[in-house]
Image (cartoon, rainbow, N blue to C red; front, side, top):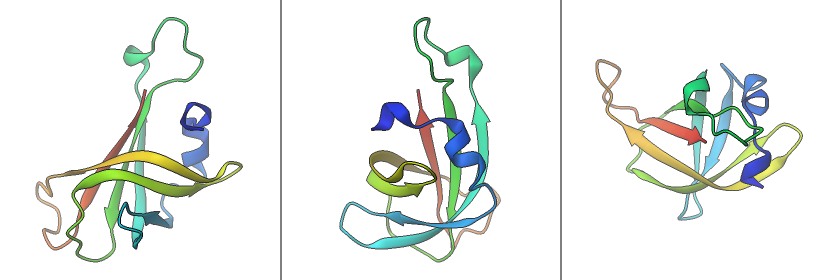
Length: 103
């Protein structure tokens, strides 16, 4: 299923609030903030353009990283998305910031 995820699936969600389903079964409300395609990372025979998505929590969380699920347009609930936390770096330190990469 992860191979069928493309940046277009996230385009419709940019700037919106979604739910990230965490490995422990809990749900975390997130803001889907930024999408960046990575053309230099594209593999020769791959059809998908690599991209990354930045997410931020709407409330404090202890979640660091792991395999999560997210509802995506046209695909429904997609499982096995590896989400990793990144430093706040000048942003609100009470919230959490995450990065997802699709190669």
